Image (cartoon, rainbow, N blue to C red; front, side):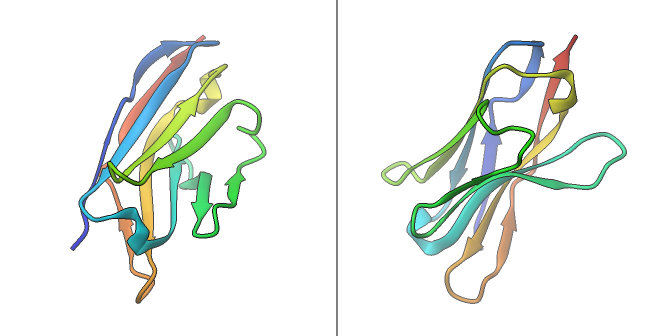
Length: 117
């Protein structure tokens, strides 16, 4: 079993920045994709950004140029740097990892990000 533990959420004013972290209980070499999703109030969960195993990054159009995803192999940590935050970025942010073998899907418990106007 894999545990993903997020941290770094909070309350920030519009235009501010936050950095989310997600620590995996196993080496991130075990995953063919790692990423961040978010679920705004009353809406569906959506992809924010991910990194696939060959290193290609993908971003939702709404966050391109403002958010940066990165992974650190030695610490098994996934990051999401969020700059120029907007009220519409308010959501619960979830870390996700997809196993190389079996394609099992793992989720963190979520961390709340609230952007005030």
